[in-house]
Image (tube, rainbow, N blue to C red; front, side, top):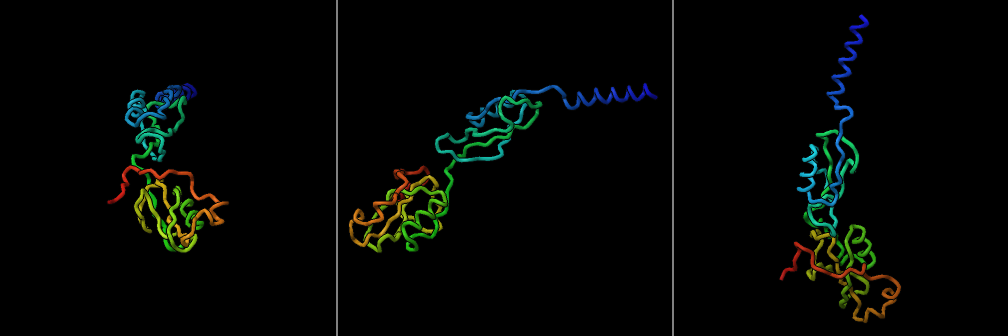
Length: 193
């Protein structure tokens, strides 16, 4: 009976070692910074499976590049393991313009736009109620509440100044008026003529 138990235990041990591939593994390559197709190929050569689980937007990186991976590079995993990738989006994310024009002051408009992730461009001043937002512009075109615009586009506030020189107003001397963002056209969002 003892010999049968030892033989059964040894057989189970050998089967489990082969089934779980104990002690075998592949070093995870660093695919961050590679294009998705190249990363998939590099992982496939090592019998690993690439799975895109998320996307993000980094303006400075090209579309389709791998931004993050899990498990981290240089770790050991078994062949056939899934490597989870985060890839840079192809399109600039957009956000909805809130109801600001004609409804709030310059400071409130700046706060609301910044909270939503928008960049504030240089202001335009027109005759009207002082410090009151008259309109919003993106890429030289007036935009309206509910409209989707790229998040990295500079939003220009058209502010009333009651016909006076804006440099004479007290609030322009002690508070920033822009995020020092130049208004530049955003791909996929052209000015309508």
